[in-house]
Length: 365
Image (cartoon, rainbow, N blue to C red; front, side, top):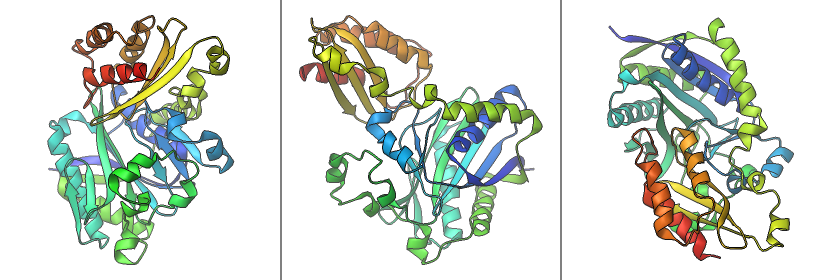
């Protein structure tokens, strides 16, 4: 007997809806009111979704986004900048009990297979799954996905590419660093991506999109999808998360400009401001404000990582205040105190990544 999940089809989401639908299902699961949920969606406008810990000011030009009426939301989970085009982008997400995917490798394999099969149903015959988390056509990516675990709930979100993304519309908003293009030896991001229309010559309808991915996920995961909507018990939760998505507290939670608003005045008084990146599997960025004696007055970590509990990240920042960042031993001691805690989780990031970023920033003084 197959598991029965709720299917939600939401054809016209805006930026705040993206956060609200997912987090409603997550919180609803914690409260015992929400079933396993499969969300398929379309979008009503251009949107940018940034990861929980990304520096807003390094990721995008927020003022330019407002001028162009592009929704900007910060996801409560995950990393990376997601660009959403209402014509060619469709959303696909899962919010399920952890018991359904006891092993992360198995989750990646099954979902990768299901997404690949969905694309093949839409005519992309050469789609293939690349572990971990990419669906490719030849050497071009058509979809990337990842998982986050919150308590005992597993969350997956991705964008299905029906039509090539309008990169030109986003080009003066997204802060794309030139080294990323040089590393790939390409002129622009469009050379790395493809879509259903680019591969088949036609743009699928919403019904074709929905049918293809409902069938592929039912087949690969061995589930039954029953269409429904937001439950009465979830409506208040939904409104709470929609409000959270648009709040300044969330949007500017990680913003170097908001964190260090009086830089010009402080620099005139002998303070110094430096930053550095350390990228291995995940990008880690540190901004450091140094007092006239060269000690850390304040600092902020950001990047495309995921961590929990978040309070430990703030605790690490506070513990480094007053430290000489060129004293690598003292920096290492503070960082390792957090990493030694058994409940600290930050996948694919090591203590050494934090240490290297801080020491590198100090060398730039």
